[in-house]
Length: 185
Image (cartoon, rainbow, N blue to C red):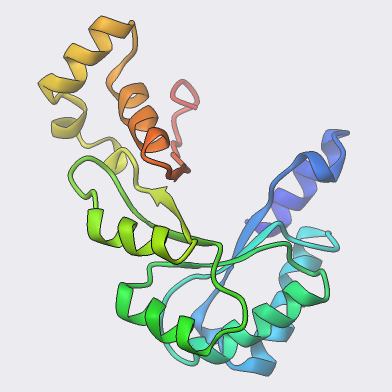
């Protein structure tokens, strides 16, 4: 979606610096040289000189080499922050033992049925902020109909998704909910 995102931002009339643009690198691009080319290709597709946050999408292949390429892109200004997505504690510890720059963010599944308190404590100790995806478990009816959320929502005049998202924000997670439903958006 990089081309579409870049086009919308360019056509919006809103200054680029008013947007926070995140993109990901895929495991097929994780060799050091491949990763450098992939960073440039992402920026070209976005039509931008820099990305605000660039993530390694998954912990497969030569992700340690890719991390070093991200550190270089950070140093030369092509990215403003670097992070991880879908990495577990052992994989993050491996990177921390090799890296010059710690990840800023770990994008990971977080919602009331999947809270990861140990992982969140580990991230906090290492200055890494959790970024919650799948925050509403793709609209799981059981989650959205939990009586606790209904009670809290009734008390505060909010619906279950609003209560769940606020809970994630209060737990120091960056929240990236998604929907294909225009009414929900």
